[in-house]
Length: 307
Length: 307
Image 1: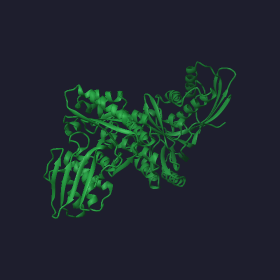
Image 2: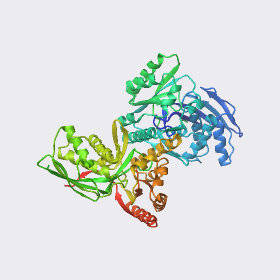
Image 3: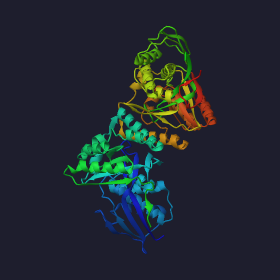
Image 4: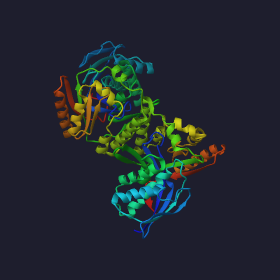
């Protein structure tokens, strides 16, 4: 195999109650990447569209991921790399994770699949670290596994693939503002009341039960975050307005996608999801902030080969 | 119906990672209770075997539960009540919950089932409050629903019935010491690190996934409690000794049953559970404290009519 074109999905981490523990992958949003073998052993980013990211391979997380993989195998490989970002960095939709997971997947395919999925996640986490400063697993795991994932443990890393009800759709509204990862982390409490933690893990339990049993009402009741959303939503102008609009128009739940600023909503059925999208648009159109919205199925595949 | 005889199971609350959120019911351990209608409208406890509990109906939680149910319906009813405790109060196996849940179930049957299961739990919680000072739902929910339950929410009360893998067995060791509920509550931290909470809810997610997917290894890896067990185990002499003995002889996991002092272990298969029981016995036989052990299937039924 001399060339591979892949699609790597946008992802929603946390999913309300599951802070640093749950993630899901989107079908309708993501990056396209093309990796073509070169005669020499150079790694060259030849094209980046859709975002202002560094071409220098040493400054781009794509380079970090490839080099770690090649080093592990004591291999050299020359590649031309084209990156077509389907969504912007800083959205809270796992932009760096999409690039990192897509790269790990593609290189593994080009090399004849020497690595396991868990190893690919670990390589992609190095890319996350290069981009965001810490080895977060939720977005890259969702991107690589597809569907709904649970990060059961970081040490050792263990990902549980959760079932995805057929009729579950996601709507997102991305306000065109920047939230610094540092700010999003700084508002987090170091300690939390045990009582809140119990509420949270009961909801994680309810959400996962709902996914296994196709119980949309249970999913809906469980999509509550009493710990992170109350402090992070202050960084997102008009969050409550959009969330309430989504819930009032039939969404199962709504919350902050990852560290924000994107606001996501889950709905049963495409029709409801579209109504929810319109309501979220309407709510935000009264504000001074630019935004875009989209509705997507949940990606069952995760990163995949296009050609 | 003039008389009913019921079995109400012992229960394990918390189940390691699910503090105040998970519970399960045992098949092999529980109370027998007989309720017989009287001509007059008196409630009389005519027999209590197996524990030293008050005969005065106003001092026994059984009376609290019955009166609340009758008051709700604006009814009067005379009953002779016999209570055969299959295990002692203060064990951490839900002794008061068994009496409370058994009573709520039996009275509902005698009256022609006017109440829903959730209402029965709420009545039984009044019994828990009378006995322990707070309206805890985990033991009574497990007793009334049977199997594995998740208390998804207290307000409004919502119980999720979780699947129970066929081959799951529970072993328990009850050291004959008393832990005051007050002491067990006092050692709990008011606040906990967010990081520990994330570990805990990831394990709750893993445990519930394991129950749905029959994945015993996942169940095993998820049976960890980084929050309550580390502080409560200090109240249970030789806890680590017994836990390690259980794990080393093949248990999937082990922990404190409810507020203790009973130590429980979960195993795959009866044979392993019996080996685990022997190892736990052996570990504790070197101590100066009296104890007993038993192995049980998980009760799928919960409280049930015997005759």
